[in-house]
Length: 276
Image (cartoon, rainbow, N blue to C red):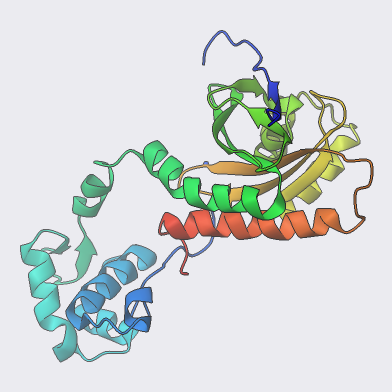
């Protein structure tokens, strides 16, 4: 059996090696309850915590009950429990409830980078198997685009970019897509764009549509399609890279875009940032 040909893209040498919208993902209609598992008390506690996090201002018990569509009697004992466990606290004299830093402290016991890699592994592997092309996940680190993870295509001829490789932001589709999410002045400085540069319009469109497809500036004959993956404190880019075959169907890019967007959504679901 012939060994598969793998094209290794070498990293550029380097001197040194931020989402919007409502991210509330739980509530009474959780995945668990949809499967038939019921935990009303846990649902109630999570609903209270998420409501306080969304509102970002102290709320009275009546306001919390109203916001959740419940009566004060339904949530009173849960508020007492959450206060006793240190997740909420009441204002002195006012009696309104607010979140403490306990949730923040718990969250920061976890390594977000390790969580991202673990969450991305299965969706990226499924993407590569589905579309028959390699894919990788990129993040900005120390002023460069770093390849954090990859999944190789299950075919004899494929691209393979080494995880941990870093590239100039302006030379990668992933880097330009992530930079496009920044304010125009910051984006232009990151990519070295002058005021009248025609590429600025395309980047503004990429920022709005949250995807970018273009020929590679690093390797001739390679096409990159990147979609944005919004994370709590930054953005990542999920990219499918392929060597254009002699006969490439005209509608292939649309199919790859749909698959990449589905993978990006699956990563966010695995991280708990979206509902299934």
